[in-house]
Length: 447
Figure 1: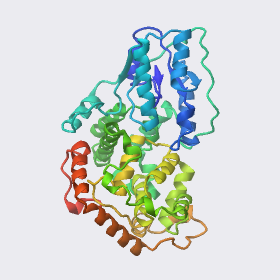
Figure 2 (figure 1 turned 90 degrees about the vertical axis):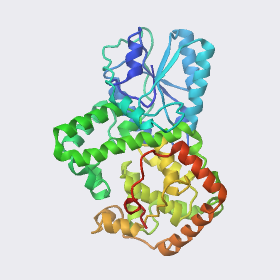
Figure 3 (figure 1 turned 120 degrees about the vertical axis):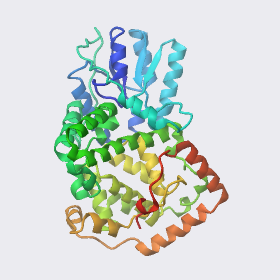
Figure 4 (figure 1 turned 180 degrees about the vertical axis):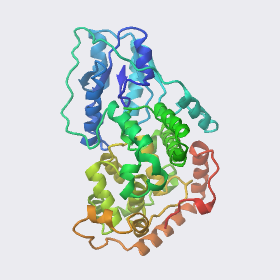
């Protein structure tokens, strides 16, 4: 049983199915190529390491350091492998290529390789029509029973975890369930009203994103627990419906990367190629990364993120918008930097969202966030900014009105290209939501 982003023993269908067929070796492989990639960071590993330590209290998880194929080949040669089980995974290009190589190897070796769905993403999807129904069907299935009482393989050393430090957010299945329970019964009552402000979001948001990203809790059990709580507590329904919609939205964005893995490094609409690349500015990028742009809300959010590994969604969108429009930075380097900062880094969501906020999907409403308006709306007394920028806000590296006007002009010029419109139509057919968009008055165009 090859563990990747599914570090749990509850509702783990591949683990359960494998355990019905004989002795099982739960195996986690620390892959140097993945952990040294530009989107990886120690804070990710620290969370994973804590999660593996927690999982080892219930399962004899073997740990190996090395690339996947040599590790599997060594086990095949010394122990024999009757079958390989895993969850389907939607992740970065490196892991996508690795999974393809593993499938080739298992075919060559005559080893059955069974991958089962788990996140609501549909592999080999032919059309987005009907996707929401397929998602609901998967989320409504009975969770797989927890697997307990597995015995270690005689003579097979479990191995030690590579060095790790304390995680910024506690990892592990036990922590995941504690977090879900506290959200559904204590912290989440005002979720719908308080998710947008960094003053309230740290407590009122679910804080399950890291656990969902690394699989210490399943999407299915999270959805089902949320819907049970809706029935128990009608007064919570508005907030829990909003949370339920976010979980659906999560899979919707992951599906985009499943259907087009190249969005990690290529514009959805290639007619936007060359729009920002010639204007790259190292000084702007460094100031944005370090939280010293002179815009208090931008700098406070970046510093909070770097210190805690988390910031709420609206502030993430503002950070990306500022880099993309005010600083006119092409998105791949900023995307890799933020990937390293997010403990809950989920590639499928990350790159799809980054391109949406950068305006390179061709199908989404242009969003240029005003940092001053965000501060006025979500930190009116300046409490959050003072907490994270105690020395006071410095001079601004760009002027909002000038940057805003220039970004609008540049975007409009590229959007007028005939090929852009044709490509955007193709993106809508392949990736667009089939839900009716809200009226323009309700769309989140924030200037």
